[in-house]
Length: 282
Image (cartoon, rainbow, N blue to C red):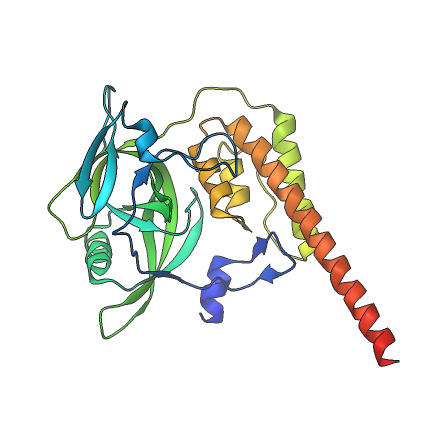
């Protein structure tokens, strides 16, 4: 990735001992034929995700494109238009910008249509456990590079969150009817926003990163902060599924504090190793 692209993406902090100045494009080859659509991760950050069999009594089961999938039943829905789904091993947060390298022909087709129509696609997190049913609409903001064989590298930005309500058929890639995930109407304690923003400033200062000062009054402050820090996908998925900004801010503040603590500890270990190395040379 060239310097101009890195500048557009800006600097991103990590929860280890290094500052990422260039974010490499994710190889978007979704080897997803073995995956299931599974339930949200739940309230515990690193808890084992619920498998589909544990919810079969409450939800319908259908097979699509090699996937065991869950179809929600018994709800009053306000479905959005049908969209293409892109299962990947990353979580895209609202406001987050991520480069993707599009490799497989079926997803080249999906992205090509999005570019032609200026429409969005749905990015959902997938791992060995399955495909999560809560994802993010992604808009292609820029084509960074095209290759003669059809591959392309794009920059996408996260938008509205959604829940998969029903998978549809007829395309080479996964498609679904979705419903927007909206926040519950819960007041936000201003002190929580101050704490989360303060934790971000402290981490940025420690890492030596130049960032814009966060807007503590933003209704999406939790996403805006987390989008600038490299966090584990499980943590980001939990943020995506939470429907109360107060809870997300609490979680983000804790994650940022933990990242700062880890960065301090890693630097101390590095300094200690250097001192030991100097003594050995003497």
